[in-house]
Length: 247
Image 1 (cartoon, rainbow, N blue to C red):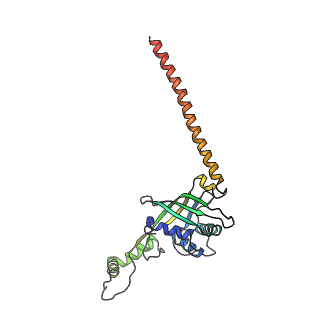
Image 2 (cartoon, helix red, strand yellow):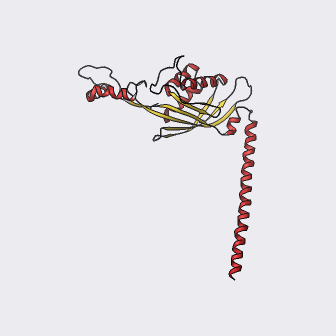
Image 3 (cartoon, rainbow, N blue to C red):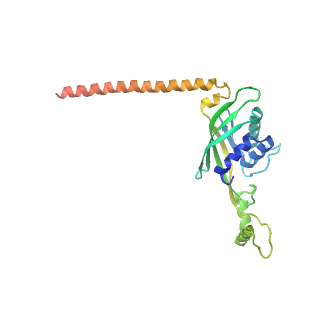
């Protein structure tokens, strides 16, 4: 992604709503090979090759991205028709962190007449890589070396060619200047407990948990009221005794 805040909706659509082939291609394109995935119901630690980006993992490849792809594929099999909506996006450029507040409709194909409507916040920790060829396959060192070899004249020629000008009397396409692209290093989905319960209890668990939350809130108010009363009596008594002694 060159502009994470603007492109993230398309990335989520590819992961959740597209056919499995497009879903797998999106994971290979946007996730680093050693990406980490955290969800309330599962976790994939970071492991595997760290330097290469882009490309499709083969059947013999062992890395965390391949496990993440399997999880998304299973997610798609359970609910073939996922609907989602992005409510807000916040991009922390200094920390390379993207927050996406969204809602989705998840319906198990073997459970008729019920769909879980849940809200969550997706937190993506991104890693910036310099890409010189527009495909995300070069490391920072490789791109730097290539442009150092070409020198300033090569960069100027590339810039001129991109503007449709002739370079040394010859027109053609030269390598694009370096671009900063962002790849997903860590993906974490944040759900409230009542939202998670919607997946398993057909909505009843979410209502029950909401009642428990209301009860806990009432207990907090009651506890604070009793504590204030006890402290008020204690401090008030000490103050009264001090005034009587002075008199």
